[in-house]
Image 1 (cartoon, rainbow, N blue to C red):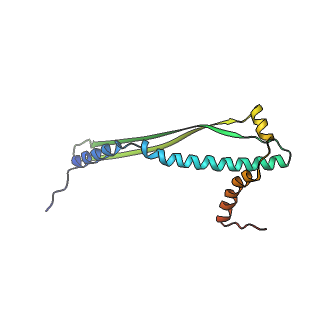
Image 2 (image 1 turned 60 degrees about the vertical axis):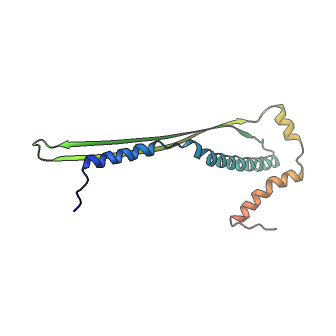
Image 3 (image 1 turned 120 degrees about the vertical axis):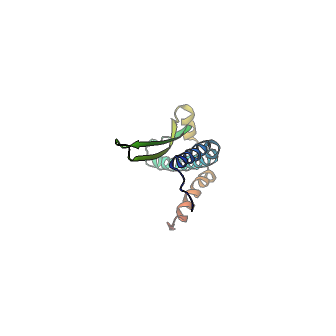
Length: 153
């Protein structure tokens, strides 16, 4: 017949496994995932911003363009393990306790810069070629039609 594993040995085993898993780094694995996600988000944002400003110009409203000047992504992983034993006052019984807690936080800081000045005004006044306009609008239209909405002629 097997003897049960003592509580103290179970606690030590749990603590050692937890400490070994805490040595894992999050840095390198997040670079590829985050870079792709942020690039896609900024690209989609630019397309929508440009289309919105084209409509604003059509209705004589002032366009505004914001550029993403920096993205700082900060990750925090924290862990805590605790163990304790409580004894009853008359010394007959004891009450072991084990606890663990883990937290993960992702705090991106995104900085926007508005386009202003003479260069902005000159770029705004320059005519847009149909080829350029279609290369911007077609991906948005195609993504809308693939999501289930139908285009009418």
